[in-house]
Length: 90
Image (tube, rainbow, N blue to C red; front, side, top):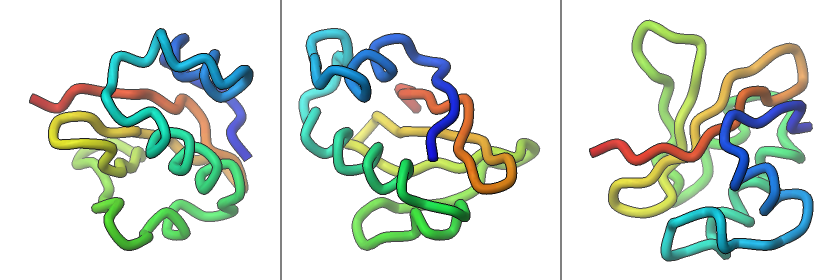
């Protein structure tokens, strides 16, 4: 389950479906990623085809690809994702 967000636009999108604050071209993909993350009980369950799941160096955070530059990153505590963020990598 997703417990917290770093990105306010992502939090609004998850709660209401309003994508105007996201700033990424593929909000449907973001929605699929968030639903999968909300259902996951371990970070490795996000290792799905096309998501390019990987851990981030030096941090207890993971990343999945949204588009070329955009990633959803998240931390993990027990069975919950926390500090979910939408980041521009480049």
